[in-house]
Image (cartoon, helix red, strand yellow):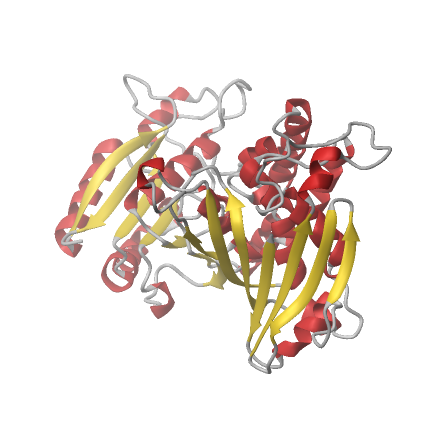
Length: 469
């Protein structure tokens, strides 16, 4: 089984320093069931490739080592010596352990720097799950390419092979690439070559630190990592979900929530419903680039960063202090690279034309418009719908009629002290119609939150689509 890692750029021969393996000689390592070899098929200033080759003894696999508790692991005839599986993860830990930990005293700056790397895994068993490789690696920011052949060209009726050659490319730190491979290789065919103990939970979490809790398929990864130990998978998932909540992925009540949003603890908070509904609308629009106008603490931005479909997210707010709080809320200093590389934070006003707003597939304006002075609405409308001109605009605002449902609100008051106005459903519909006629959009109005027969939904959402797109 074979893994190659290629570094392209300048002074790429320094990959040898990062891996702690000299490019001028082949190195050999003894493993429990065979040997590992490290060598460099190509070395130059512009392109250097390191190869990790495992030579697994199939007889040892079947017989087991002398004195082993469980004897052999596999039948004499099996694919384990020839397919990339958990043996490769063990070898990465054994052979590249220092690099896996991100340590390199001689080239510390390079070790801490994202560099263009390509990893190739040959004969990786995915069982024919064609989307698995993309599900696992694309959310981490990699470009993914897979090649699959027929089981036997002479017998095409046997169908496609359950093995792929996988190539992933991205600009990452070497230690990140190695940790991604360490965790995800065993996820493909769900079969460990060693006894799985409770200590494996800590291994998974340690090697997944900084990225696994934010991975959109983290539960699938944990289940496949522990295919025969559901209790271990459940514990790992609980910890990962807890970490996810700690980074702000679970929306909490904010000042924009309705007065009684938190009174009934059995309900999903309105703000969480709002953010998830908007996220779903963004994905349904087909957008890959989004600008979150008036982002606040970036709760919507945080959700969008997790989505593989979304390649670029810009969050802007008029307040520098709010953006500083957003950076803390997002834990920007510890954010996983696949999320951080998508993100831009930007200070800007929504009532002035700004060329930085242009070129996005979708603009989101969530619980923002009611904070704008009515005399400045026209400037806001032009800045978004005329000059920024996104294909889709998703805008939410309170439904003033629903305020009658809130026992603690006095009549004819607004939900928040900074609101300059709030529209009824009829007023919102009239405004969307005006926007569509003036700027060439069509609009679908939807409600968010628990509906009332008389007053409608607490939040109203308009999804504007540019005509001709």
